[in-house]
Amino acid sequence: MSLTEQVHPERVRPERVQRNTLSTLVSTQILGGLGVGAAISVNALLAKTVSGREDFAGLAQTSAVLGAAVITMVLASVMDRRGRRPGLTLGYAIGVTGAALSIIAGSIGSFPLLLVGASLLGGTTAANNQSRYAATDLSAPARRGRDLSTVVWATTVGSVLGPNLSGPGKVVAGWFGLPPLTGAYVIAGVGIIAAMIVMTVRLRPDPLLLARAEAQAVHDASGLAAPVRESGWQILRSNRLLQLAATGLALSHAVMVAVMVMTPVHMDHGHADLEIIGLVISIHILGMYVFSPVVGRAVDRWGSPRILALGGVTLLAALALAGTSRAGSSVPLGVGLFLLGVGWSFGTIACSTLVTAASTPRTRPAIQGVTDLITGMTAAVGGAVAGVVVGGPGYGALNAISAVFAAVVILTAVAAGRHTSALARTDG
Image (cartoon, rainbow, N blue to C red; front, side, top):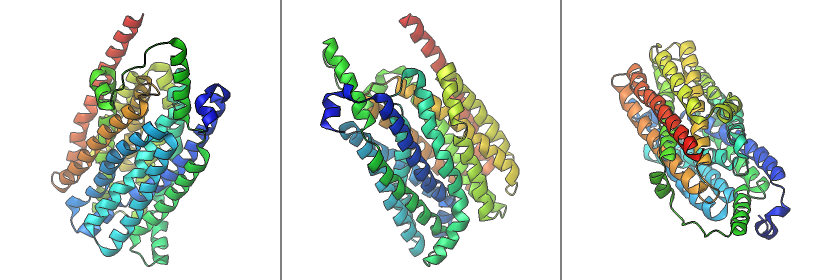
């Protein structure tokens, strides 16, 4: 961001900047989603192959989720000090490093190195997740859900295509003399590098810095005292609505990750081909993102609590279908995983919009970093437990346990609805 833009924000047209911001984020989401999608369909299988243990299969994706959670706080700190562009670019750079380490780990058969690589690969997920918030920095309140969902939707292209590259990935691996499952990580690395370049070149001026400059100008004109600076944790502890949003976001994500990450292993039990497994996962990811624009408009029109409740109901339906499917039944598993993705979409967009609405340009990176950290940590625990459950009671038991948490999502939505209604009465 130039000095002129920082000192004289009125010389910059926010509408033009917002259009450029959205188009840039859409591009990076497609490329970053390609990288994540390519790796996600083989994470569990590669972990199983390298470790030689099925109960370790979920640990690679769990490491990726945990890594994304931790890296999110690093990116949030960078964005808080320097803006969106440096933070998001750093996330993609970390992701590229993770993809490279995963290739090396698969080649030499090192399970610990694979977990490190998967953790760093989570940097791409962290950058993609934080990008949805960057889309709202300059949004009008009535368009927050729509703008956020536009960026979430953009992940559809790369993320749906990515899992289907597990087959071509074997060909790529053959070109370089690598183990077949590592070829997907080569493709992932290329996509992430492209996202990093686009982010560095195009996200100018920085939307967060511009939003802060505008807010500061309004504040200075009002003559009010500067607000006391608080950490994201302090703000979260004092804000009931943020607590409910974080809970709904974390549980929706944890349910999705736990079931999604172990579905390839469940299908492998039924001797499904790698291409079929990739197709089912791509159908799942399609469900996560394809309806995002509709969900965003629904949030703007009917409010986050109602859409979060709908997400909880959809998750329950998905778990019932997937949990009663046989290992080799790709069609019911595909439908179940599609609904699992749709339920996640409802919960993520509803809660993310709620988080943005309850924050200011000054506090957003800190609050968004904390809520995404909680979300990632919860999902990491879910993924780790999922491997143990599938290795013991089985895939059906995993879905039954997940259904309990999906029910809590619905209860959280009810509580959020009551709280927002109470706030509206107070404001009135």
